[in-house]
Length: 391
Image (cartoon, rainbow, N blue to C red; front, side, top):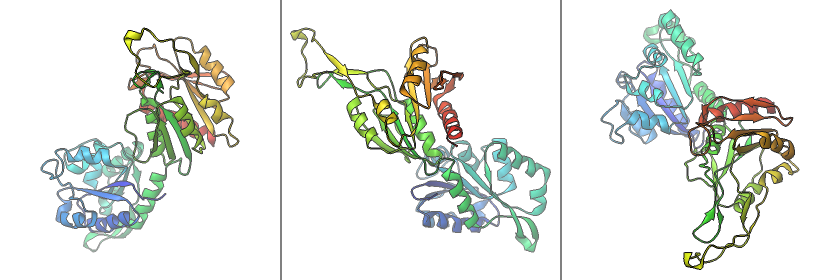
């Protein structure tokens, strides 16, 4: 997996191996990544902040306050990062992170980030083997942290033993593997938002879809290493790894979808079924009385994807009010691999919310009812399911 365009936060804690972090930063940059550094105060006693500023072009964060570029440097870094690497990771830093403490800029940045975390422990053998350190490692692994090393070799003060930080090239290789994710190389198409079908230059027929669910699905696929194209009507932001195509009508969405090859397509957009057959060129006036609006069918985008000669694994969506019978019928008739259905009248579900309650509809009509979850959690669970089904 290429690091080109990736955003890496390099955390440096206070150990003799901190000198290797400068070379690690250079290796990330040579691979095309943008690197920003956060250091513990002790780390600055081993390697000066000016070294990292010169290497990366950004002043390192060394404290929770008084940073020249931010009033909240740890939250800014945490949100900015595609991945956080701590190298070296001392016993004290590992313990703070495992315990959820945020008493310095480095540990606070970790807590403020949802990005994957890679740690490269470095310490004397006795410290590495101590039960407290091993408890910290066990906790971090259980939390999904990626631990690389340590190895045996020369340590500070002329000692030999386990606890030596792995070499920067090994850390870079592990980071590439982590960023690749389980969907590296998979081409994903996601549609999101509600289409707007013009009546006149001012008015349109639309729906209440915010696009939040589709955007969460696209962002999660990108974080898993997929090559994602998002076709959306929503003004919501999208992950910077996502290739975004902004559209408004069903016709423009159909055209954009047709131009995208995909291994997996998730059709989360709320596409209008009908549009005014003859939108007028000038704004309608109240004085002219209510207009007679004749409707015609819009393109059936889902069916066009089903009909492709290289048909992607296909996930459809259906927003219903009350019974899911129509969603079950849609899954059967449309020929999707999975259909995500929800009753938008239920509390906590529907358009514009940060949560949803969905049911997974199988082609044979089988239902798996998921509980109330955030849309981000639904996106993660949905991709887990899709990845398992495609294997």
